[in-house]
Length: 604
Image: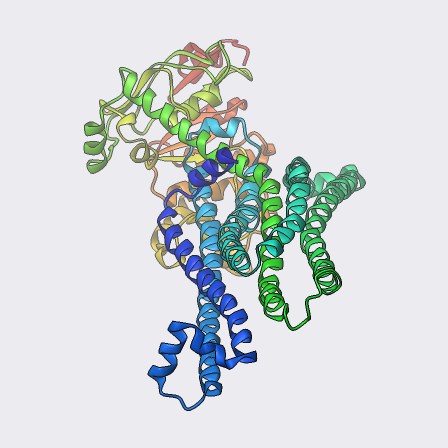
């Protein structure tokens, strides 16, 4: 359990200072509650025998100070004081519970924000081992479970432990034998649920895994709706969803049903105990009901809080076991991301091409500029857990305004080279220099020079305007830049034909546009953000010949104005390129003009 809470403590990084105030509030309300309940028994004794006030020095002194005319009046005042204590206790308890709920929901929000920030900034290699459905599930589902099944139960256990301890102390002062008998009733319930801890863990894992599979099925079925309809595999996805939904339902039912048991068991046991205690006291010990009234009054009032406190504590313990899988998942991801960042920093510091921290800070103040040329020298890269390098001493020189083509068979290393150029992958050796400045002095500044147009452009289910000005708040969208980007990407005719112009929604993933139109929006996006270097990764591969021709015209119109790096299998796309590089097995096997490389009977 210590290991579990150490992980929770790590996840709560940045919010731990609020916990002491929360615990202190619970402690005060619990102490006041225990005092109030303790006073109830004494109050009933005094109410049945007012003259006993004079036998208690403090009460007798207090009675004299008030100057009351009768003990009955004093009993009334005492009753009001106890009522006031309970009111203050109730207010404190409400504030504590409200603060607890706010704290746990704040942590859920912060954790979701922390995860999305981490997932967006983590080194690109992290995504080579992760499933998108798992990341979505972590942000949406696991953070919610950590709130409801970890943080709130943990705080509930702390709060109820204080309450139970205070109540047990009052009961011990009232009747020790009675207390021992209550403990003997409650203890077996704790032991029973302790024995079920592995089941709770397994059910929690089932809940998380089935939820992830539900997200995956939704992504696969609705994300490829056209293929699903044409192939006719709707039943396949329906069966998968039904199976995972049933897994989720079964695990959820078992988890929530088991949470009801503690209160039922303890409540039934204590009621049976009360009846037996009264019967045995009268039959065996010849005690009158009046003799045990004050004891039973304290016991009854204590039970009102003891039953829910104990049952909620046991239920919270089962939830903690149930949430252990969620805690492990989030903890593992945060630790892995921390490790990825650490390794990246070590690579930056240990590799001879990298710079020290002072250089990095200096570079951030003076962003990288591109005026002359990019030199890619001796780049070496291997994917994690592989021995053979994908790139082996790659060397390229790209002058500003040039267009270069990268060609080669699948697996030659073209896309990996582009990922290195984009700053997504960090090479094990070699250097990328821009005007004799290493891009690794400030990767962000380097990436601000690059526009990336992949084979499949991601379009939001939003307007043409917002898809071109991707990531820019509405009030900051520059109309002039937008119009220039539309004109340069040859989108004017399309915009004129749309019913609402640039305010027309493109549909989910651009479903209302053709492939060529989507690609040109991708180009317009890069141009809106004023990127000097455009990287086109198989941007025309999925287009028909006519559409490819139109897109090629748009690309050619940018030649000389922008620096173009084009990866393609379609050789017609790179006819206008100044230089063409043929990659084979991670090396540049030939370079030169289009005529020299492509027309020289090389197999691509």
